[in-house]
View 1 (cartoon, helix red, strand yellow):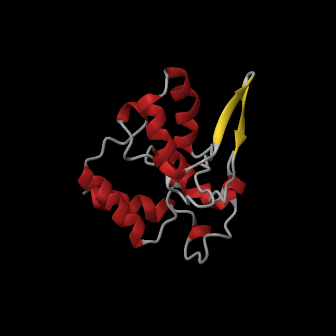
View 2: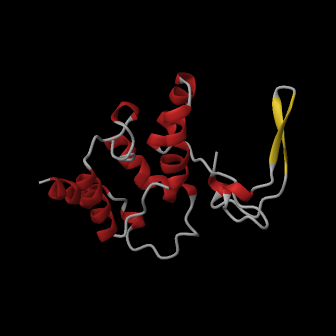
Length: 156
């Protein structure tokens, strides 16, 4: 069955050094990405993506089983910044060059995205953000403040 296939794959491939980890805030970039890279090689790092961009083609029930089996062993899942936040915007609205440039690295775990949402007085409420980007020649100058960006120290 699908559940057995997933359970066996996790048992055989989940990085041993990640088993039973405590605080995840102290992990290195390599540790955060270890399982993601295994999943990328298998083609399972982006199960919710459309198949034409590297998704698995799984049903919603299969995705649920996948999540449940990973939760059962407390697996460190691929971070959402690239996989769940920026990639859907790129594959939905990006041009072919942007898709070709960014999606493979997100899927494989070779590229780590972060997104600078949080601002004083706004938190992560995107409608309340005040930061602007002003074009200056061939680049942009950002004006505003950020409170923090989760795990940005590891991002590319």
